[in-house]
Length: 298
View (cartoon, rainbow, N blue to C red):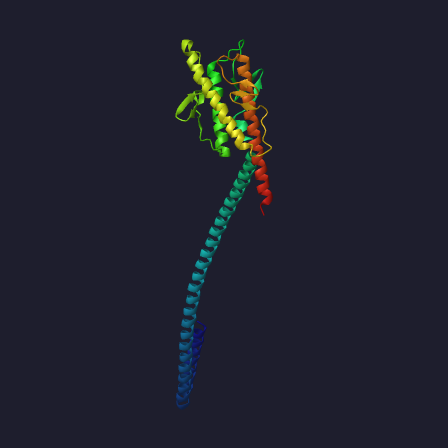
C-alpha cells in the first residue's frame, strides 16, 4: 500500500510539472524531463511489482506458518489428551494395585488366623456334661435316671465317625481293615465286606439284635481308633490318656449289651477324651511343622 501511495504522489508531481512546463513553453526541456520521468516511472513500476511479488511470498509464508501452527496445535491437543488418558490409566492401575495389596494383606491375615485356629476342635467340640461326654453338644451314652434319646446318641456317633474319618485322611493313616462311613445319625463302619451300623434305637423285641450289631460296630470303631493311635505313636510324644484294649477304654467296655449304663457311658466319655487328645496332638504337630518351615524359609 505504501508503494502505491508513493507512485500516486510521483504521478501527481509529474502532472503538475507538465502543466507548469506547458505554461512556460519549454518544449525540448519538456521532452527531456518527460523521458526522465518516464524512466523513473518505469523504475517505480518495477519496484512496485517486486514489492507485490514479495508481498505474495510473505502472504504465502504466513499461510504456511498458520497451517503449521494449526497442525502443531492439533498435535498438542492430542498430546494433552494422551497425557490425560495416561494419568487416568495410571490412577486406575494405582487403585487396582492398592486393592490387590489390601486383598493380599487380608488373605495373609486370614491365613495366619486359620493357622492359629484349631480347625478340628472348632468343628468337633468335645466336652463333658456331668457324667456324659459330648461331641458337638450331643451327649453320648445313657443313664438309668437320664435316658438320653437314641436320636441324640446316634447324632453323637455320627460326629465321632466323621471326626475319626477326618483324622485318618488328614494324617494319611493306612487303614486297610476298616472303612468309616460318616452318614450323620445313620453312620456305619465297614469291616471287610460287612457294613455295621453305628446307631441303635428302642426297637422292642428287636432291640437285642439291634444292640448286638451296634456293639460290633462300636467295638470295631474302637479297633480303628487304636490303629490310628499306633500310627501316630511313631512320634514318641503321642500318648492317650485312656488306654484302648480290645473293646475297653480305660478299663470300661463300649458294649451296650450286658453292661451297666453307667459303665457304658463312662467308656464312651473316655473314648471322646482320647479323640480330643488326638486332635490336640495332630494340630500341635502341624503348628510345629509350619513353624519349622517358616524358620527354614529364606
